[in-house]
Every structure is written in structure tokens, then in C-alpha cells.
Length: 468
Image (tube, rainbow, N blue to C red):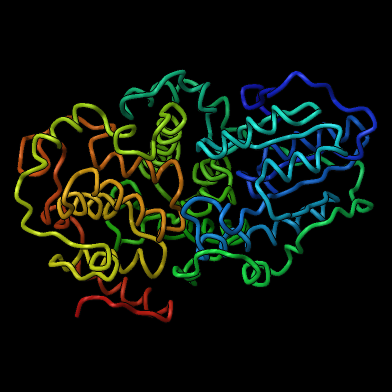
């Protein structure tokens, strides 16, 4: 199928540059060689112009590094980019990685390009890159939206207040975009292009040469890259997916796909993911519908929130007014338990299973979504103020989760404080914001979950500290 027109937008009024040596693709959000509409548009345009394609990546480092990113995140990213470079070379597409902001790298390389193609993310820092590129590049700049099923502005032109308001809008257009993407033939190989850059083939060497936060180490549980994503997906569809509709809320049941890190880093297409689930031999109609609800409706509600909320990363900007009001009314309520950051990170609270969940997050970079909500509600309960709780929850989320620093992260943290929700019965500290007690864990086999986490942490070579 051709690339849907709604995925493509022109960012400036410049012309295609005559005499350009290549079509340049800034690969920053969609870090994959397959199921990548921006890459395929670059190939299509390069074929039309009888030019090769050069993909580039801007590696943020040091003081100018990506906000909240650390060695854990960069290791996963770099594993994926090493694979992308190999796969692109096999298709005759060039790849260059340089240190610098994506905007700086793209603008520099665009001096010799005929056309510049961008993919699309929704965070404020990404929007600044795109604006800088569109303003400074002296050639046509085209952006292709390939990391959602339904393009955000096609789905809705405003901030949606809940999943129930976005769901029918997505439903009306979803089938238009759930189409397989053909991989175009590359007619002009990039073998003669040798731009100066970092050798992406050795991720460990690249990581070792970076100036970054190394306090959060790489994990063994997740290997980066599109091949790892597809292997994990195939194994999941052959096993854990069966019963997803009824077991997805139980972290010990093995029903989670663990696709969120790969979606965050653009190492798998959400369209390909939904199509693979639909085509799976196993799983019921309920399982498949429930999976689509999470990957399309819930995930793209998060994109909607971040895209249409200027200060999505701040308490005052992300949390709805009714929730801030009720939390302020209860700001002076007595808090029976208060914990500092070190106590939270080390799992030294009075809540045994919260500590277990924190251990999984800290040591393996992941936590089941059901537990993430409980985890965050407790930080609100154990913080001096709701503002402090919001900031701490977001900071820990973005530091330890492989899929942190994502629209889903910002949205999930804001949900803990009332976003996309309604008022509930009033209670201390929370006011009318939804409360979660230890009783919410009764639906899971907590002892089985703890045993699973201990095994996972031991496999990381750390194994704790978890409660005895």
C-alpha cells in the first residue's frame, strides 16, 4: 500500500534542491528499517530524482544530552541503531551517526541534499528540532508520521478528555491506516557516499565514548533492535497472548507483550504490531480487541495529550484543574508514611509488594502497567505535597523505565493525579482523585509475582535489594 496522505506534511515552502547528491532522512523517532513510512517516502523520492538515500541520526551527548536519558536508555538505543545501519546497508541506503542535536546534524548534512525527510515525535524537544530544521534548512522539508496508527491531528483536532471521547474518532479512521507498508526497491545505491560520522557497528564502544549518567546500568532482560522486537513478538503471540483479554491485568500471568520499549524507541511499527496480532492463529477475538485498545486507543490518547498540552511535564500544566483543586484542599492532611528518594529507590518502605515492584523497575527497566498505577498512587500518598509527588514520580519513571521519557510516561503520571479520569469518593490526601489501596493487589497472585521478580533481578546480576 502507498503511504497515506494524512501521514505526510510539508514543513516549509522551499523547493527541492537541484544538484543535490542524495535524499536525506533524519531518523530520530522511527529507528527501524522496516515498516517505516518516512524511510519509504525517502526511497520513493530518491528513486524519482535518481539519487541515493542517506539516513542520519543525531546522538545527543554530555550537557546537551536527551533530558533524563542515561546509560540504560542509550545502550538499548545504540543496539537498535547498529542493526539499522546493517539493514540499511543491505538495501543500498547510507547511514551516518554524528554527535550533536538532530537539528544540527540534519541541517549540516542537508547542505548537500536535494530533499530532507523527517519522521515525527510529539515531545516539546522534538517539536523544537523540527521547527529549527524547517526554519534553517535551505531545501524542501517533508515530515512523515509513522509511529502512531492514526495520525494525531487526523484523529482529533483538540485535547481529548478521556479514552471514551477519542475511541470513536480512532475507530472511524483506524482501518484506513492499518495497512501493510510495501518496501520500495532502492534504484540508486549509496555506496559512494562516505560522510564523516561515528561507527555505529559497535554499540558498546559508542556508549563508552559518551559523557552521560551511568548510575542506571544496561539491562539483560531487553535487547534493543527490531530483530529482538520481532522475536519477542513472535514468542508472545505463540504463548502469552492467549488469554490477554482476561489476564492482561495480572503481571504474574505472562500476558503482557513487553513491546513498550520497542515502541518507545521506534524499533517496531505500531501498525505492524496490530496487524501481527490480528493475524495471529492463537488468541480470541476478545484478546485481539483488548490488545488493539491498549496499542491504539490508550497509547494514542497519550500522544493526543502530549501534542495538545504545552506543559505536559509540569504539575500545573498536566493535571486538570478539578484534581489540582481537590488535592490542594487536602495538602495539609496527615501523611502516616513519608519516604525520601533513596528509601523509594532502594525499596525500603512499609509496603512489601510496592518494594518488589520497585525492584523490578530499578533492576530490569520494566513494570507491568497495572502495578505502575499502584506504584505511582503510593508515591502521591507518601509525598509531602502533590507537586512533590508528581515531580518524583515522573523523575523515577523517566530514570529507570526503558520506555520512560515517552508520551505514555507523561500521560500515565498525570493520570495518577486525575488526568483522563473523574472525581471519586473523597478521602484523606487524595480528595476526590482516585485512590488505590493494597486491596487492588488481590486480583493478582502476589507471591507468584514476587518470585518472578526475584528471578528477573537475579538474572540481571543484582538481585535486589528486595525485601526478605
